[in-house]
Image (tube, rainbow, N blue to C red; front, side, top):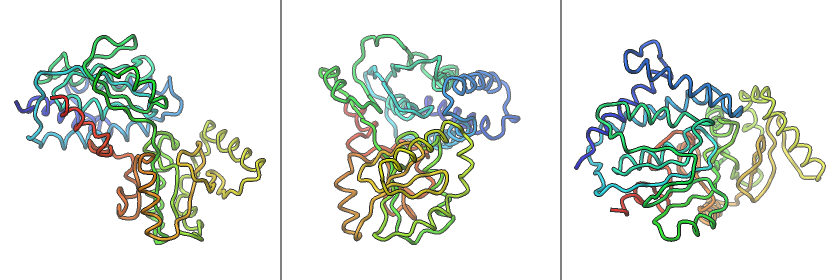
Length: 344
């Protein structure tokens, strides 16, 4: 059975999010009422997490709006039968981090049972309420709880450091577990200032927090960072946010007292380091000797990498697109739709 009706609801949500984030004056009727709920959810999210900004959240809603509208033209998604209850557990930072997996569950025809504190992050429940309120969407397909999970058939766990605990907890059930990863940027030395400005979006959106934020650079040996610093300089107002500034001052002081060699442009610290997840306001970098060496580095560390951004997307994703939502953003091994299809 095709999912034409639910797809219509998702497409309708996409249209609503684009209007809400860009042209709220054009909302009418049912959408105006839903906008009031989303306004409240947005305000509560900002109140409970000072790392969020209204601008970042509206940008995220707009991008998901585009993705959801694109879903409306698909006709090859088949509903699972019988429907399974999929527990969704996430410890990822950005708002709507669980939306990708929720969409995949719904598109596969399953029910989503989401472990979620609605009071602290009400954005996802607000979007789910929009879907449930449309006539074409099954009302029983989404359930939120901050209590012990009721019985479920399978689970998706994201952003948890202690993957071993969940492996044991879910031993008797089908499960997909994703431990935290980092996104990286590959530089060739031929990037333009405009491309570095785009890379800045991957570095500083949500203050560099989250697995889609670039936290490491791979650069050719003897790379000159002056063009990179010049290209990202427009992001210097980020230092006006006191929590980011505190992290910048603290991490810079720690590195200097430890006699680490660092590069610094006044709002971002660069440190040569083999690790992939850098502290807030810091960016690790590592040299590669040749294209073959670069390919070997990427292959060796593929389990640690969420996304790889580069000039023209040569190594995966183009500069400025690390945060763009897509349904195929996970490696094949951790592909959500493939996992859900395996439950049929």
